[in-house]
View 1 (spheres, rainbow, N blue to C red):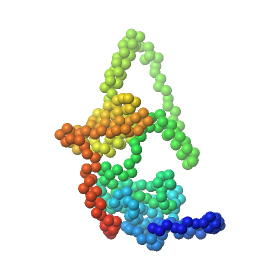
View 2: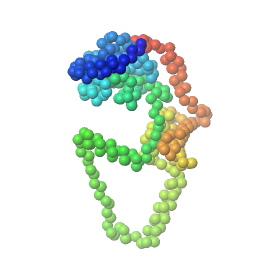
View 3: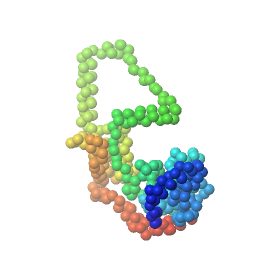
View 4: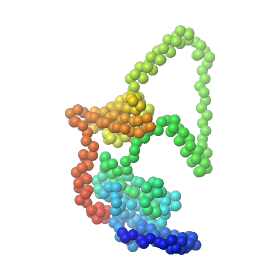
Length: 316
């Protein structure tokens, strides 16, 4: 696309003054003229359109994250999500749902991602709001997000800050629950002799030390993002046992489980700041090491030969 000529300082000032004096209707029309996607909607710029109704248009992204990446946008010009009326948003996501089903069948992919870039900081590159619908395959490394751990204390602080701010902005009241302290009859405290109490305390301490030595933990004790990472790396894994070890300032999570009839061991090493340093995966010795992304190599070679027109024709 040819670059637009640069405005002189005088022309820029004249344009700013003109925009300042525009009515809301004139400003809306001016924005449409400057928006590439508004020009696509009215047919002044060609595109690979796959779906259209009275409110929306869907087309193939010319710079896709994966082949078949769709853009679903309202025909009216809205820059960001908060500007859209609720009915428009609802209809947009309904179209996304339908086209997601089409992608799954037409491209024979195993999943789809519905992605919104709302604002420059979120990666929005066009001043016309849209939904990105991206076909997905296992281990395709699209939209990879760095895994981080937030400890429970910090999670609670963030929760309270967000809850208070949401309540303030939306005018909702936060429920306050007062927890009663547990009380015990005085007889329960005194019925055992000091010697018996001391014996029970020693037994309880020994049991705690034994549990600590075994280093076995429950699923509920593992940060959700670590569990998500393990389940992402080994699809369908049923976790049987977990151990946690601290070593040289790092925390190492060791998972044992079964997936597709095979025994797996997954080791996730996390540094003191919660950043994942290393992931190691082993399965049955007879099968050798796991090679990432191998299942998709042949499909990727096929994808390279498929044009945008070929994909657009799948929707017709």
